[in-house]
View 1 (cartoon, rainbow, N blue to C red):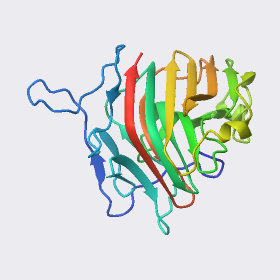
View 2: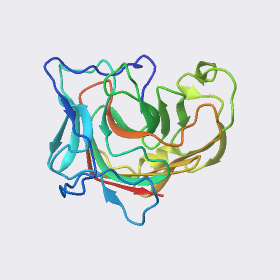
View 3: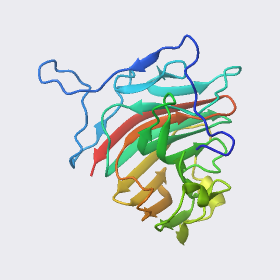
Length: 261
């Protein structure tokens, strides 16, 4: 999530180098890093091999592999100026289901972006839909549009986003997309929070089909958006995990699986 006053991303720390490993299909090498077909598939495909960042691209001063997980960490004294992502290089999924386990420790904020675009002038920055994750679990599971329309649905909300005219700034007020219309409730935010394990492994599940976006935590639907905002919505794009501006934190992701629908 990109909150007010924290609208920039992290530059690469001095001396850091970029991890850049492109995923490709090879008919002769037998390599195990392949671009996932955008056609529908019956089974999930693993996006992380558990041992390396092959197929992922990010700032190596922030991201590493540890104990079979992709780990992003902000350490004391090296706080970020801008949010930073590790971006999956295997394609631009449209309709899909993604499942990953995550563990957040510390006091920070993270998330998973999808149907996103990479900013050309800011290193490892994405603009697009985000399944939010935060240490206090105040926002975990909500739909936040990074560098865009801001909060589209809080935890517990089912939202319809109608077409709008004008600029994003006309409707994004106080970090909330004010043009959205609540159509239903999935439960109280306090009760939903109790379903999330603190500083332990949780399951994140995203189902994106057409203009319907569903975020699940540990099997419970936390937010749902039906996006009819033709001017601003997206139907495909990049995916990536985030480390967020703020206090020291550590986020780990493992068992990352994707199925194109």
